Image (cartoon, rainbow, N blue to C red):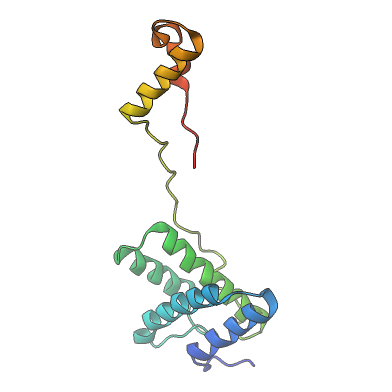
Length: 154
């Protein structure tokens, strides 16, 4: 099956068939892969390249294009993951002799900010501390505990 003339649509279908058969991928997963890889194929089309012949720079150009279109880093990371899986498949099937996605790194993901307590939540916290300690002003008695307390992450 060694040919760089295989249309991208056929390669996408072969790849999705493998995901469904060998990895038990569900419909939503397959739809997401199809959307992501079809978008990549449409990006490559004006250059005359396809999956079987694109080089690493073509992948970098696509990732830059996604950034330019305002995609969030999580969406870019998901699309890069789809491309990595596809190119690993093409290498394993000997459709390609290399993996142009192997050296790419994903976008940096920002860390979520800690939850900030509202004024009413702080008031309830202080009232609860006062009730538990019986102190007239719990915030004066335990200021360090209250300040260093962090809200649980959900």
